[in-house]
Image 1 (cartoon, one colour):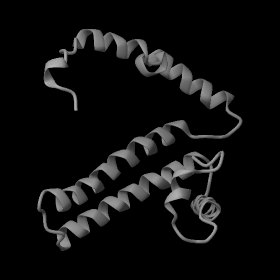
Image 2 (cartoon, one colour):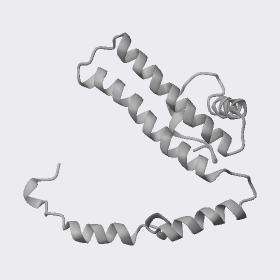
Image 3 (tube, helix red, strand yellow):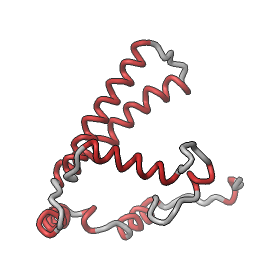
Image 4 (cartoon, one colour):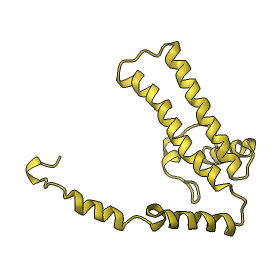
Length: 144
């Protein structure tokens, strides 16, 4: 553990400058963002619906956060996992699926294709059909 005496205050102005220096132009500027979306839309060999994909990516994150909030409150804040909490969690999972379907659609897949590929990936990772810590941490090339 670092002793408090050795800690120096952070210069937030310098840190802000550093953050901006290591951030892409596309992340910072509207014109660059719009140009990149146009480039992706017109130069990609795939027909990807970028507005729908962005909506899905942000929505999945937001809704999984809301689902996690219910679980967090039950585990760490003493909230009872009663029928209301359980129902709330279920509704948030429905929202996750709603955005997930948008992501699947935006990428040009069908939901069953994604699920089948997930099964293939996991069967390859766990050929015995059972979870193994070693296989979950040490993966083959291409299995991120």
